[in-house]
Every structure is written in C-alpha cells, then in structure tokens.
Length: 68
Image (cartoon, rainbow, N blue to C red; front, side, top):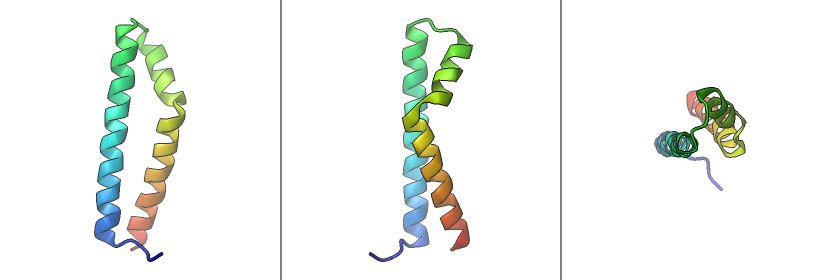
C-alpha cells in the first residue's frame, strides 16, 4: 500500500477532528440530560476509550503530516 499524500492526510485529520468534536458534544449532551455534575461529565470525557483512541490516531497522523 502506498503512503498517503499530504492532502489525504490533511483531509483525514479534518474528518477525525470533526468526528471527535461531534462525539464529545453527544456525550456531553447525554450527560447533561442525565443532570450529571460538570466534573463527572469531564471525567467521563477523559476516560472514554473511543475518544482516547481518536486522540492517539490524530496525534499520530499529525506527526506523520508534519514530517512530510
């Protein structure tokens, strides 16, 4: 498989960041509907495995993008 072009990396990063933002928003809205305290909402966001994986992938792609 060939290496992605810088434009492809940039597009992927934009899409992943948008998904991450949308996921955080959805989790926050659901937690607010459950009337969770702000501290608990932040704790939930910090410990969400999908958000953690997204952050790792985004960081990896940003590093790769900077090296190109």
